[in-house]
Amino acid sequence: MTSALLPTYVRAPLAFERGEGAWLVTEGGERYLDFGAGIAVNALGHAHPHLVGALTEQANRIWHTSNLFEIPGGERLGQRFVEATFADVVFFCNSGAEANEAAIKIARKYHAVGGHPERYRIVTFAGAFHGRTLATLAAGGQQKYMEGFGPKVEGFDQVPAGDWAALEAVIGPETAALMIEPIQGEGGVRVIPHADLRRLRELCDANGLLLIMDEVQTGIGRTGKLFAHEWSGITPDIMSAAKGIGGGFPMGACLATREAARGMTAGTHGTTFGGNPLAMAVGNAVLDVVLGEGFLDQVAHSGLLLKQKLAALRDRHPHVFEEIRGEGLMLGLKLGVPNTDFAAAARNVHLLVIPAGDNIVRLLPPLTIGAAEIDAAVQRLDAAASEFEAVRGAAE
Image 1 (cartoon, rainbow, N blue to C red):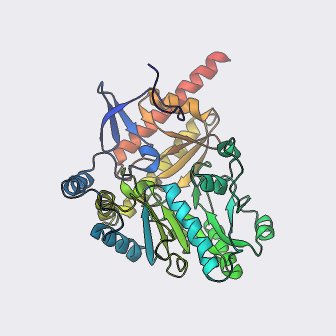
Image 2: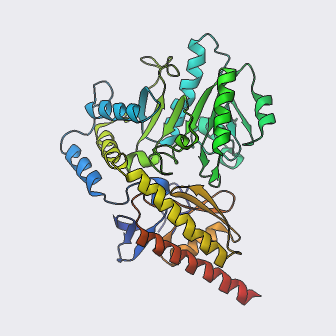
Image 3: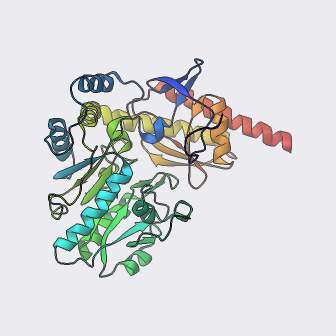
């Protein structure tokens, strides 16, 4: 059958009927251990009772009013983020790309209202992924995503992460901000060293720049802190968040200091669906769990346990697993075999992983993962690696 859907995805031949915690179940009853979590979205797993309850309750009350009226759930969620982070203000939207668009606009507007509209350029870093809109594609700078879509959106300069000479050379009188992911997800689970993030903060302060942190994939507890930049001890001026923020419900947010957001007055930005009552109910429910006593400590513990077991796995299969990257429950395996082939082999043993750049597969399980499920995942990775070694041995 020919699909009516635009063919922009290469989909695995799997469809799921329901989810239970860290497991997905097909219509035929086959169970798959989900170490992708919808690309770091299902932070609390599938069908988490607190999230289901919050959404169901809200769905029976009111779905949408628009931002022409007050939305009490959004006021509450915004205040909770302010109390838990560096931020003074929050803008709710529907996705990570929208959150990053808001961040870009906030940074440019900050300088414009300060009398320097010429300061609009934003420096980003090679390997970044900031979204699929025309502006966020330009920010990410990856040519394969921009090809065929016309001229690159103006205003973005890109340098290699860690190349301080190149970074200092590109900063000029038109530079408004630096924008970086504390861990590059799509770019290959590349961790930006904490010392480098601190140096970026100092560079911004010395040059009158804003620091934008893209925490779309790293936020909401993924690394064992509410947001990954907290490990470095610094704070950004602007930060984007999405994915895990809604636990599977489409939702994004842009957080900022009041000073950074000084130009964002009535009418300067908006959204039809962002901050709707359904999303706000689920977002509050997610924070109920993630900010609960001991939850983030457990995420950090689970991440350490998984990384230790992966190290032993790498020792057993050095030709398949070359390197382990990441923090908390955002981990990547650098492979000696094609990552898409390995992801298919993992599916054959009913484990779901996510390919990324630099021949990586990402392990992004629900933050609620337990020790038994970690053991099961490692066993399945072991089986997938053994399959590759058997094929290689037969070929030799």
